[in-house]
Image (cartoon, rainbow, N blue to C red; front, side):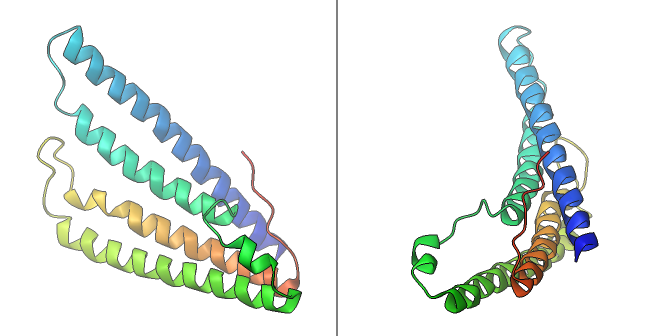
Length: 164
């Protein structure tokens, strides 16, 4: 379990770092668009589609990290009122439901990715399927992190935040 937790913590840290790097790139991209539009009177055509693509990847990575670090929405007030044994069952059920959603997210993302891979994005020339890759990444990471939570719950432990 310790090696799996270390692995998940490492993946979580790197995902968060990649999201932060993507956020910096997004700010630069948007600033370049504003600079081009208002100072150069020639807005680059690639900045908006790149910014939208970055938002997809940043969100996917941040959502997965949020699931691992328990930063997602929860019904803790209701669960906290239950007896300890029922709390564990409710928490396991929550993680199983989140994991089922993540599997559906990843599978649907993969289907769309393969369907759209051969279509180029008009302004960028990259495959349109890149829009759906974040769904696959987020789904896979969320499943990985839910498994970690379920193992920790079974062992009576809690998952510690990975930190940066």
